[in-house]
Image 1 (spheres, rainbow, N blue to C red):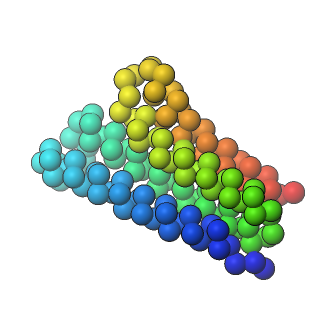
Image 2: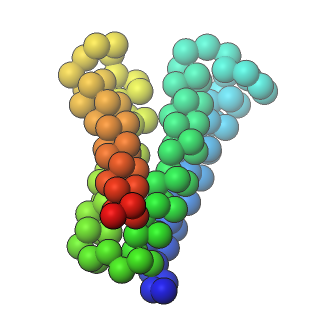
Image 3: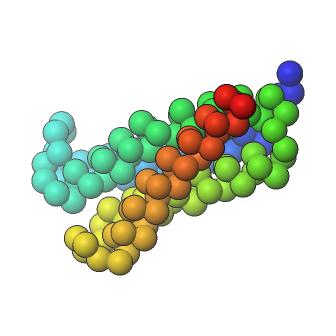
Length: 128
């Protein structure tokens, strides 16, 4: 088995991004004086951005790591990880776009779809 070094590197980047998203939520809680719950729309959007990250990134990274360890071509592993990173950076930006705006669809929708695409492609790679 090959050590998934590329995935490990990106996992470090995602760890930093997760800490940043968590800090963003904490800052919103302090600013709004909300110790628990959502306290309203702006903080709820931060919470859901972090929650969506936490719900999807670990599975995506695990699947890509397994694919890398299985010997999937390096360029495919890198492409999956770059798409995942781009999507996870776009998603919180799109959360604060005006409802039904092009930015919301492109950033939030693009972030979600790119994450699901990485999970789908990685899963197919592992099953074939």
